[in-house]
Image 1 (cartoon, rainbow, N blue to C red):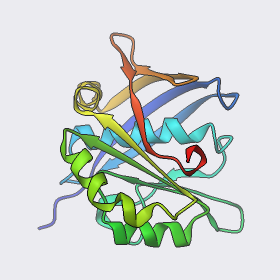
Image 2 (tube, one colour):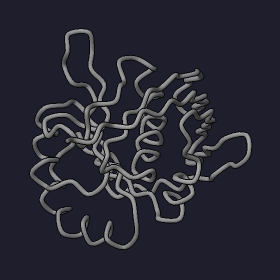
Image 3 (cartoon, rainbow, N blue to C red):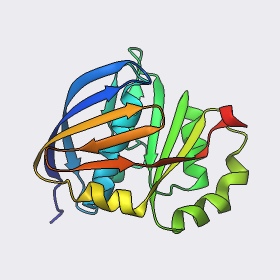
Image 4 (spheres, rainbow, N blue to C red):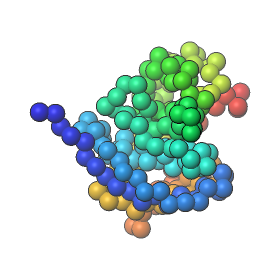
Length: 187
């Protein structure tokens, strides 16, 4: 018998000064049986990170781990074109290339310890030509702290101002260091 996803709910209040996006977002998050709290909360963080750029339009969670042809998060326009494709973890170079061919913008949010550095070092040279790709890294202490915020019904607050991102709840705030590993506009 296959295990079913666990459903989490989050009310996410976002204040993104960089993109002038201020809003409340009610999220229903299906956590795949093989997904950890850490990975699920990185999905929430990635959602908060890109929603301002999207002006709050058409951003939603994909099927993620359970489906190979969908990202963890994506933004589609009214015609159904993929505007933004978001991957988590350390996807293969092939998966990233395919995403770059399908979407106008691709973001990868990697997380964890030194394995992220090794992963990026191995595939960076093969992906440098993609002008629609951004790669970010979240350190292990941040991803672990985010996992500690997990509960079935979450009320989360996120503020983004310049390079500073803070996320938390009524009890705890976490300063998030989102390191940019690759941004073609910064070449």
